[in-house]
Length: 237
Ligand code: A5P
Image: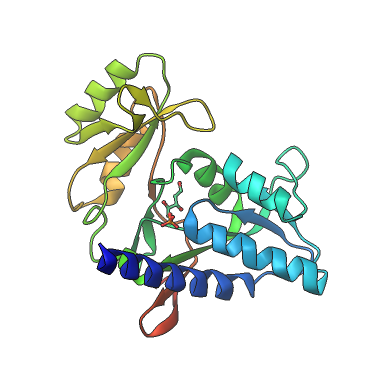
């Protein structure tokens, strides 16, 4: 128990170190995509400190209600896609990162749809993570979350099963499904380590009733990783 607490504390320090390094990449005039999850939360903290102390002039586009609330509380100016359709740089976390391709699994914080919309509108996407997220193959540590519209979810679940996944509905508590900011359900699809993430993504892209999935292939341009040897930066190879 105590050991688990120490590991979690250390992991948080690594996340924070990566997030603070990413905050240094932000320049005045940028439209910044604000990711979701605990590592992105450290980034938003660090960014707000720069806005307050250096007068950095930026506008943020949050990827979730939680990030929006944090940014508002920290007085980070926000904008919307109605006003601005291109983001200069997005900083977000990830659940798994494959070095080399910088392909990712994201969405275990429950915000994958908005995260992918923001990523797809971004010129650059920087991922902040601690070293425990680095994998040889996607799917090694976590399942692939899939966001599914509520209507007919039973049919969509069967379709996901037929693709070889073991879909499990994300729940808040017994009998109470988790509902995303967009009003959808999430199914965690456990495939195990993926041989061909592109093929899996292609199949998931064509499931009627599935709005988006957590395979983020080809989006990240840089990954900043905090770990026992300090902060390391990886570019796409
Ligand atoms: C949110 O939906 C996710 O994509 C997060 O970015 C991801 O789960 C990483 O979260 P942590 O930074 O909390 O580990």
